[in-house]
Amino acid sequence: MRSTLQSYESGNSALPRLIEDLEELLLSLSDGNAEWRAQFRTAWSVLVEGYTLLTERGRYGVDTESMAKTSQAMQRLMDLVEGEIGRRERGQTGA
Image (cartoon, rainbow, N blue to C red; front, side, top):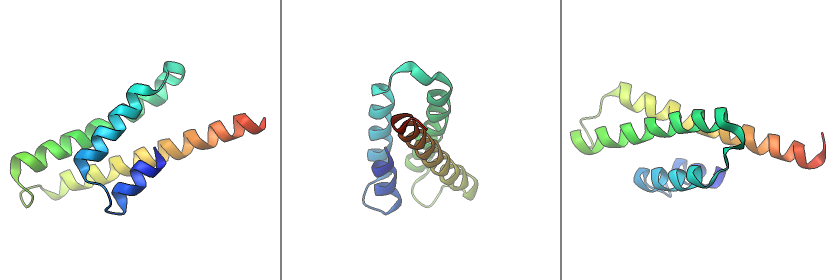
């Protein structure tokens, strides 16, 4: 997931691809941490909403509030992913 988000942030992936990749990843996760999944799904849905506005209004018609929400959702997704990676790494080392 980290590489998927980083690819988008670096401009190597488009928003529709990011949304699709994150949805596939979300669907493949087990239900072991329902709260984490819910938070991830919420942030992911903000990206979907932002993309919908982008396609409906055109590239230059999206307001700064929508862009800010999309940016915040990206940061939230990155935070969730980094936190989960850290949790799993700690679990593997027994810390």
